[in-house]
Image (cartoon, rainbow, N blue to C red; front, side):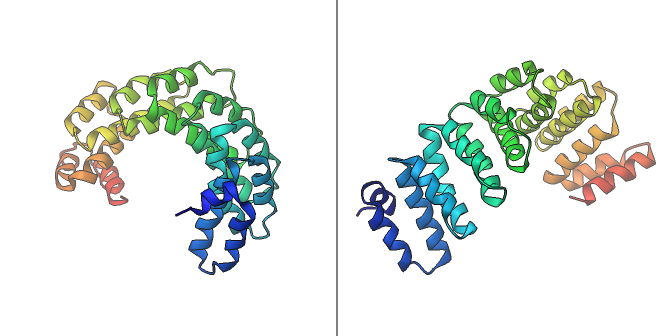
Length: 259
């Protein structure tokens, strides 16, 4: 049976005609994405123009979610030109973020470079964080190396921090070891705290030793408390109650009570 996506690639008008029969909003959203995805295989520019001209912004966003991954596979730079030509609004924001998500799987360095060059706005900022976070998971060495060396890029430390926080969930020790690349002490402590939080979920004693090695900053201990309590609240609470500093003890108890 021919899918709506396949039909859009071979007989666009027939595919578009089926939209009139769809009253269910969820089915309509799926259909719009399928048509845009199929159309993008043969003429992404025309498909993009159709998406941008849809009367309903909700319909346009649904269609864009099908268009963008398909267009990114063939020419992400042209897709970015399309997205940045859209009027301000939800469609533009979603499109920029969605393109970043698709592009990072194809060429993360190119994607990051192009997004760094954009004038900051909500969609491009979301895109930068998506690229940095996903690249750190897919290829942590390459991501951290590139971001560490990107000193000429504005706010490169912000996105290096995003990458390392993301990496914490996959390799907390590696994230910890890279934290000292920052010039901002607060970024160092934040990455270390996130690394310890992730580590404490399975290896709380290792996390405690690392925190001790750099002076047991309360920010780091709060990270351990959060991570440990998420898996074993009783053990984490016992560790906290053993604190000799009653003020620190209370702050850690407050930290886990907010989880």
